[in-house]
Length: 274
Image (cartoon, rainbow, N blue to C red; front, side, top):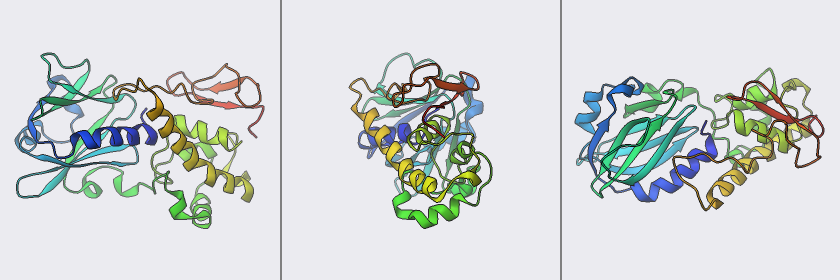
């Protein structure tokens, strides 16, 4: 599932290429039209002729701000969920596999959104706060904790009960962290994912506060450093423990544990996380 680092890299990659581009056409895959949270006819009528004013990110959502000739803007918002991917390339006769929609640009390129599991959601609205489910409840961006400060982080953290991994994945607590990066954050913070929130000491909380943005920033850097980076693929080979169940911990050499299915595993090291 794309999380904050993947969507942030996507934003940084696509933004300069899309900003200022005019949409010439919209193609919709009729077999996947149910993934659109608005009538296909509305999108076909409103998107062509608009210009991409900006490309932004909110949590795990990618937002295309599209302005008409009068300067009025609405947002095409995609929540890729488990398997949503984007690809920007030259126009061709055959769209990629599992495509949902394609934005044809006047530059003779097309931005395709693909989804192999049909779990993503696509919204078209001038007001995400009102029209996108859960938007109003999204917490602060997980990579912006420096603006929050440790005391405010502690106050927010202590509002929640349960296991620390579940809290990190709760988009109302912080926006942008999912299954994969919660594993990485807790590994970097030396904390077991199954620990209860109330069991953490003030020192644990301070370490978590420092670790969350540093892990996310390092992930963005690692993704961007990949010379074979492609928008439509998700290479997480750089991760320390997530997806590495049964392997060797890079910090202590202990065997990495895995709980849950291969589809959504929880990975951690019992040797150096406590």
